Amino acid sequence: RARALFDSILNSLVTMRLAKDDQQSAEPRETWGRRLEFVLASIGYAVGLGNVWRFPYLCYRSGGGAFLIPYLIMLFLCGIPLLFMEFTVGQYTRLGPVHSLAKICPLFKGVGLATVVISYVLCTYYNVLMTWALYYLLHSFSPSLPWQSCNNTWNAVGNCSTGFPGNATHLKSANLLCCVIVLCKCFFFYSSSHKVLEMTTGIEHAGGIRWELFGLLVLAWAIVYFCIFKGVKSTGKVVYFTATFPYFILFALLINNVQLPGAKDGILFFLMPNWSKLLEVQVWVNAAAQIFNSIGISFGSMISMASYNKFNNNILRDTYIVSLANSATSIVAGFVIFSAIGYMAHIHNLPVDDIATDGPGLVFVVYPEVFSTMPVSQLWAPLFFIMLLCLGLDSQFAMVEVAVTFIVDGFGKKVLGVFKRKELIVLAVCSVGFLLGIPHITSGGIYVFQLMDHYTAVVSLIYEGFISPRSCSLAGVRRLSVMLEKMLGKKPNLFFRVCWQFLSPMLVLVILISSIVQYTPARYGKFYTYPLWAEVVGWFISLVSIIWIPLGALHELWTTEGSLLQRLKKSITPTVDLEFVSEKPSGESIALFAAA
Image (tube, rainbow, N blue to C red; front, side, top):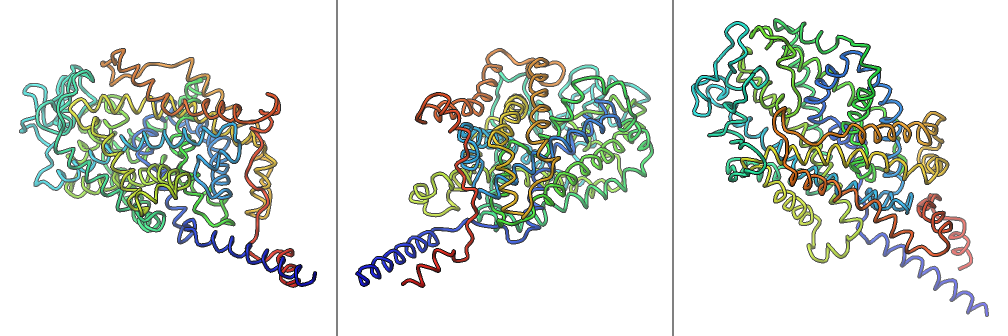
């Protein structure tokens, strides 16, 4: 009997040991080489082109300095708490958004898949911005900046001048978009003849592929691939440059711009408070939308990046660093942009309001025009477009990584059986993204770009931004507290618990309702309205991501046993193990070894 007992215990130990060896033999999850790499990657993802071209314009249009009040309120009541929540979920589960959210709240397992779809659709056209930046960067090394004069084939005679005589508004410089009364495509960016877009009259006229842009789109995706193909090990090294270099250029531009004549007028225009704007609901909606878009909440990227952290990494500290760095960058960018716009208004004797704009028109039309009039323009132009590339690439890395993490977490063994190496999986993801980006580089591609941006980054994201926090809060603030206590050794304070449970979801709900009530169809500029079929395509793009949320909930309720009430209760019960298992031998293991 003693012999039989010994053999039984020994066999159990061998089985346990083999199981542990099998688990360790599987490819372990990567981790960031240093904590700084995670922080830089997160800041690089959060600080993107929106900080440069959207926040400054949004600030002046929504009340100037007064806009900072709703912006900071939304930052502390929505941005910081929800980013902390996403970091918590990713770091504790060590999974991407699809599988981590499914474990936190099975009823909303479709939310994770929706975040993956949104991020991937977004990255297919976001890289087109990098293509345009590369085009400008290459042309900025010319002996003279090509948008600097009217002696070019893409400039229309009679509507283009190298300057503004007095306060004439019927002419445009070689590149300036904002001051025109008549609609004209005589510019380096919008030209209908030889330059960047070769823009057509509408989305119904697609035109041909711009082969120069096609080659640069290949180059843009190649850059993305070679920066992330080794996972966080390679990305972590790249962000040391891409996340820090833009700050050197931004501060250099700030020092240069504030010394220009008229810069003071532009900065005052940017900051002058209009307190009456605080009574408008849309201003608060704009503030919250900017926080969500800029920090990257509900895209799944922050969950993915946090999943590569060590288990006890101090994510609370990282949350504050990322959030505050992002907002500070937006404000500094506002000073840089509006000091330059004030300078342009001064030299052309025009109101600042005539030149202020947002979106691609700011960084690819207005700001290049600023360089053409600045001293040492051949230096500032390349540096500015390299800065844009760095800002965009960091965001692109994170969005592509979401898709790669989803594939590896969900289908790792099967996919690796086909592709053999993870590098080939990344190549396949980048290749599909490249193919989906081709419609954006046709002559009518700018209309496709605007349509995709409206229905992906606005409509889908607002709905997803409401559901995603609820999927975590339904799992229970107590369970989130347990996760943090296991990782950091202490529970979150009362502020975070109240925000997770009440304040953040209520604020996001108000944004969702306001957006539905004030919904307007997509437009391009002030003149072009999309045809009905394009609107239908836009809504289809939104549904491609949103549809997974109700489908995931219905699937969970259908496959769960019991009455409807029992199914609902089971569906909001987390399946993630809240008991952290230490790698040290447990008391039971020690007892078994002693018995053996």
